[in-house]
Image 1 (cartoon, rainbow, N blue to C red):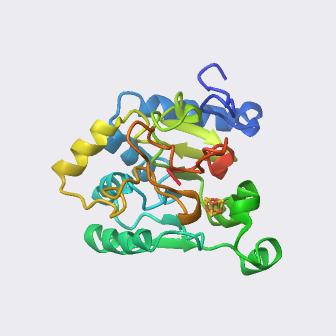
Image 2: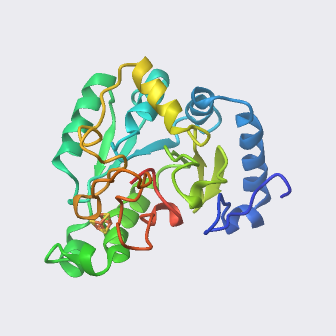
Length: 255
Ligand code: SF4
């Protein structure tokens, strides 16, 4: 297990208990991490989509502020990669329209919109106001549970997480294993300047709310504009300790 990093849920990238106790998983993770070493984002995506996990990998996207970059890179390799999108019922209309725009522009052939189960919604949030009283519980039934269900058919997932985004992401690796699934993070090393340069180079459309002062975009009730001098994710769950939605046990892709 020396080649494998054990996940610290607070400080960084992680490997689940199963990886620690299952030599086959540990060996496969070490192999994938070695294969990813020295590759750029396109190369890591190529490894995820055409390597030993071909056909078993889904990409998780929020269609948020920076999503176009990862989706564009993915579409160059296989635009029919399953894209899992959490339609929480609390998103900005701009996000839904942006999803449709990127789908058409990039030729994305397999976007799967995941909704919270109606029974969960009725039992846990009949008024639709749980976000104000218990955001962790709201994120759980609107994001964590639907994503877990959707990922059951996949061995690996691709995320757009970057190290610069939060302290939880600061040390993550390009390939991890968590919750019984491999996780590829092709943009782990990218900075905001890298994202901007790629966006300009490929003339990618921007999420309409970015220019309106939202550098990180999630659900409408839990996202606000960021003022001058505030940091990148200060507009998410403002005023709360919370800075992740709980997806994958630690966080999600800018969601
Ligand atoms: S981000 Fe807010 S509205 Fe969206 S699922 Fe989490 S708590 Fe609920």
